[in-house]
Length: 108
Image (cartoon, rainbow, N blue to C red; front, side):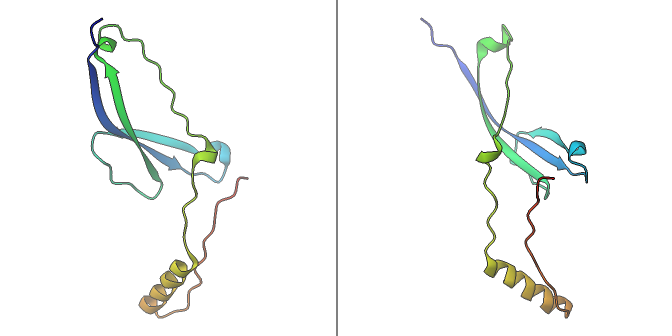
């Protein structure tokens, strides 16, 4: 049996979180790029390594679902000493007392 030739490509799917005070109005925007993207604060990149058989383009029949379970997403870690350093740096630049706190979003 002949080996099927595979086509490979790396791309990035960039998801942009569009916030709203109402959970049912929150949404995501999507874009794809071949180069590693520069991300904004509300964007996350998902690196895609795509391997497709060349026969796909002769008989296209493709359906894909990408799902990332919430329990698989790790929370960013920010140590207390980092917050203290940020607070000190801001106070030095502004000449005022600042209170810097890490606030995590809650599901309402």
